[in-house]
Image (cartoon, rainbow, N blue to C red):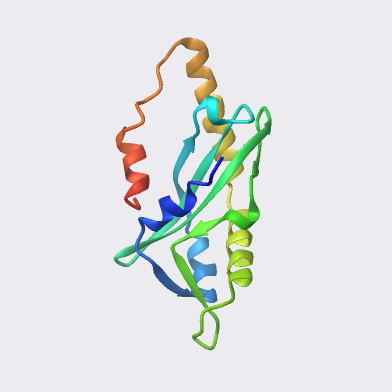
Length: 151
């Protein structure tokens, strides 16, 4: 399946931040959305993408990655090299850092967040609703729309 991340993060306004600013911003990151891909497109029980971020002035700073459930309640980052962000990171000299260094900073951020617990909890809620017959919100629900607009 082709990644949807570049499309999602491409809708956000680019934000420039030094590595130090990025590290400070990550401490304030919160979950902004979890999406689940249709069962027909999944190789596992659960698969999708997650967005974490924080408002920063007039623009939000966000980080998005794909996840996959490898066994019930255990989720992992699907592709550490496929992480996307609207942040363009600068080194101490004010120059853009190399792509590999940027990926490393993004992955460090992901591993400092409690995202796996949030996704596993969301999966458990979805399963509980499915087993009780409660219908899921439509694909065009306000929460999903907010993701596309950088909320």
